Length: 452
Ligand code: ADP
Ligand code: MG
Image (cartoon, rainbow, N blue to C red; front, side, top):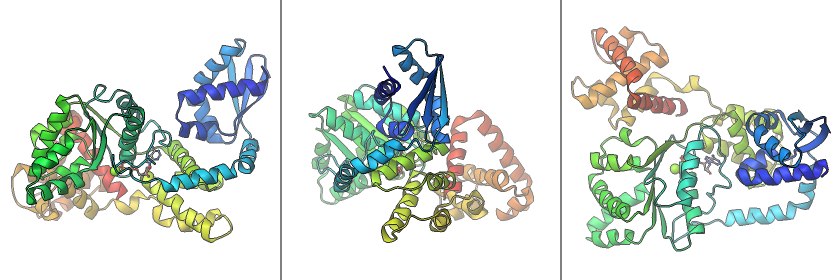
């Protein structure tokens, strides 16, 4: 077996083990370029592939190679930017095919039956440590709907791939289990359905429409907060499906225990299966996502530009896509590719700078919103528990994030005495060290303050 054949067999193996998106990102333009005394040298196109392959895939690659050649004991990765030979071939040969695929991509329409958008798949979902668990749980549910984890509850900030992931589960189940009836519904739509069913006295018909569903996917359930009638109806629908071992998949911007004004029985149903979070992607994953997306969108940008975007657009995946879209529009209207200075100009609005966004107003606003209060409630002179706790959290964050002095915080809250603020600060600090729920709440609030 020559080097080329050996590497082709490794690639074939790797393709079976990892998703298409990851495969394309990390293995494109790689090759074996040397074999010497038990050591194989692999050329990779850039430093990121090198780091990723040597850290994450070294073992797997070595194992595969050793299946054909036991003498090999070591791998060496070297960067060879001109190893882009595959790319050139691909550009020439596959251009037409890519164009055809692109057309197909644009034709993606929401399926009327399931409400799912076929563009959300596992194949184009990039996995990194920040969403590994959510991805694994979603795959498990796709393989064993109704019996792996029920319900599956995925939570995390805006634009981090929740909708993509839960729809990917739906698409995969609809594809593999043709007889199963899958239904995707955003919570807002569910709530408005309930409201109009009440008005037109057609609640029974609405409820009956859920009976034949095998997989029910409800997006953004934090929207149920405070909607009592919808919660009640949803509780009933949930139970009747759950009792029949039907799969339920939910997403939310926060964990069940942090959704305000949610009936206890629903909260306990929501957290009765598997609860997993998606976090912010790290640099490598941002880069991987960008590479997947430009391939999907069928346009090209230099590595330095992609690296610039990955280093600077950090808010979430949706923003990464937004940044790419702006550049795509530029490329369409200008014949030349933007240079890095142009890119910086074009992406000004996307560049993440925590120093611009964490301020007093932002903290108050975010805390109030998080606890479903109005901002002015936080300043009410009251000892009501639902107000006191959020107020203490706001005081704590003003101190912790902005380093405000205790007297300054006291003045903001109209207190003459700053010992109340010290008490609040110490209490939240101590409790957050002992109590995971509070720590999680603080993290979610911080995430929003910094990404707003
Ligand atoms: P959320 O529902 O959490 O607000 P979405 O699922 O709508 O976020 O994701 C926003 C955009 O980012 C979508 O276009 C989605 O395809 C894309 N996206 C998010 N996470 C990933 C990922 N891990 N890999 C590829 N694309 C992603
Ligand atoms: Mg969403």
